[in-house]
Image (cartoon, rainbow, N blue to C red; front, side):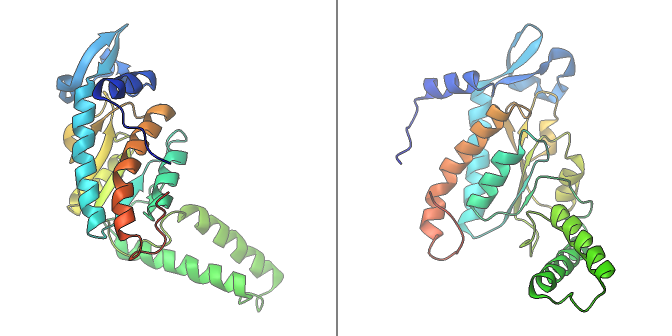
Length: 244
């Protein structure tokens, strides 16, 4: 299906319609976000659409560069409003994702996390192949519960074999630990930054509403449109990347 290209003005109207530009109340505005506020309506801060588009363009450029080099982008966002769009985006481009709970040490204690993931995959394979049948029914039940718990914990990072080259985050305030770990490991971070966030904590801020489902979906759709051409160029070399 051919994507419809919107004019600059149509893009801004769409952003306004989908709530992309609606921030928090003025009293919650982070001081470092003031340069990116376009107006205030009924005490609610409205993000400058030009800041949103400029920030998005820089984030897209960084993500395209990583993807072109077959790098890894870790997608992080655990709110229910963000989860469906993030998982769809990550799955489409075969990126690892964390959409349930951030495990402390995911980046800073990477070898331990990957060892736990390997243990989970080994146990999962044994369960599927009947390798756990040698245990008593009580022990098999215990192992089954453990595998189920690990499956929920490690969902999205089963193929996470090396630290990411870039991390994309939705809701910087909620994921301060993840961002701090990325900073320690010198991993650049792109993030949807709302009016109550500190934009200086991330490398590529995308100024937008980070709690409205429609806003998050709009950002992820824009990122998808930008990465599809890259995926099409490398699809033959990297199995598992969907381009449509």
